[in-house]
Image (cartoon, rainbow, N blue to C red; front, top):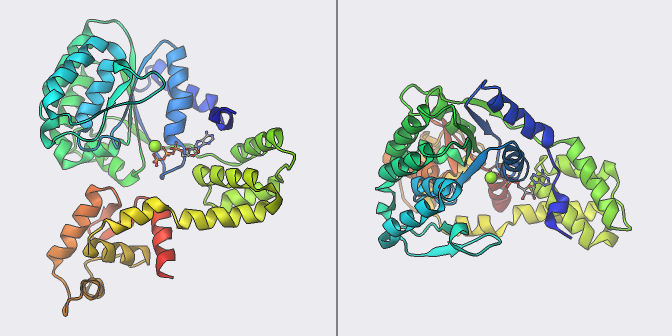
Length: 370
Ligand SMILES: Nc1ncnc2c1ncn2[C@@H]1O[C@H](COP(=O)(O)OP(=O)(O)OP(=O)(O)O)[C@@H](O)[C@H]1O
Ligand SMILES: [Mg+2]
């Protein structure tokens, strides 16, 4: 069965976004929600098809997938959508700095090729001029475009400031024909991006929470389960599982998978299995293994609810974890926090308050220490 079968379509939500663009009420909007809540799935499976049916050409770029060269990712997506020839030219220009090209998608071919993350550090350098090329190509068309920038918080990074300014300027003068939908998982970073006067996208897009999936989603999933198995799932059990999995669609889908593979074990066992699996996620394990001791120490403190990493108590605990006799310097804490913010593991709320981007990672960590 097509995996699409399990997609819970959200046509009304797609039309709501589209409507605001069509009415000219706004030319840019931003949405945010925690990780794994269904933003990307909504954008790709509901919003993009609706926009295309409405006559828009859509450009989708996930900046997180290409975080070493987000500008290149965006420009490449732009060319792919409006002028494949331009995309070829872009590839030529980039050739020296591209180590690896990967073909993705159903049709393996250049038009479907995406640049992988393995670019040299200088790969972003000509991005400003490539953006100009792309915009010039666009100006020769009469199409209307919706640009979807997923994991947009990457644009707020210091290292991408020049590109962000260039992008903003290019989009500013094309508001009639290029609409922008930003999405991301870091509310704090997005708020700063659109709300701080010194930021390139200041006051540029209305930012609002993404409408989360709720009981109607669970109900629809329960109906799909009944379609494919002789062991229907009780709505009550499903709703309880959804709540216990923090109303996270991705975890709920895993729970359904487990239930469907082991129907004899029942709903409660599927929930237990899913919860323990979520806490033992290998990707968390790998991420954790690859971290420096100071970073780990700070994450453990924050996961345990210790909010101020610069506090005396924190600095002593970090020292202990590092095997040092006396409290570490502010500097050590600062560097670790910077590394963790750059990797979008932590978000800064204010000077001394940091929060996990991914609650599931924090939970996993709490569990590790118990
Ligand atoms: N509308 C939906 N119908 C069915 N399942 C869904 C739906 N939306 C999300 N899911 C499930 O949740 C998973 C995570 O969704 P998605 O990747 O869209 O989240 P996200 O908010 O973009 O997360 P991230 O911030 O980590 O990128 C999907 O892979 C899918 O299993
Ligand atoms: Mg996503």
